[in-house]
Length: 257
Image (cartoon, one colour):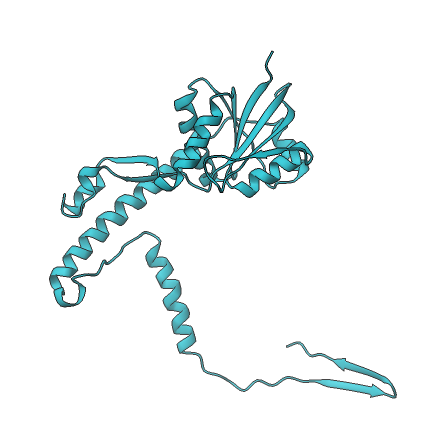
């Protein structure tokens, strides 16, 4: 009987490399994937009650991106208000197609998929991007999630012994946040850019006035720090320094205010 092949996917190549080193005790072999930045590591491992061939590869963070469909991508194709309800699509970006091809090729011969992405909401969402790609090739593949806080022998062993189901609710929470960011950012960026270009055509005719949920708080931090620097008034500072020497022995005393 052929040994079970398991596809393991980490979030970054460094993580895949270190996980493979720990689990194989330094005995893994390496080969190339379609992405030159994301290698494939193979090794034997006892997991899920049987000896298996582990195929470990990686991503480079999020593989998919969210955008409006073609009918709403052009600035003058619709009113900015329409972007709050316009259809959106999630797809693999062009730069990440080599990673997608690697996953599609490797999963064909595997009966199990284990997600090793970071254990936070973003990691869960990235894991479901992998699941979507792999299930298009192997709809009935068994899927597990490895939960770990650090890449150490103890933590990895504990994760292998306590595999769980991926958390779809955490992944969906990130999808909602991404969609809100897209809709709000695109709608307000288009609205204020087109409006202000009409009001100030000589100054802003070629400029984009961007809006984003995180931009205003971040800009506030920058402005606040700038004002602190500009308003700084230097003051004379005094400190006490005491040195005591007896024959060949010298002692410095420090003063802490």
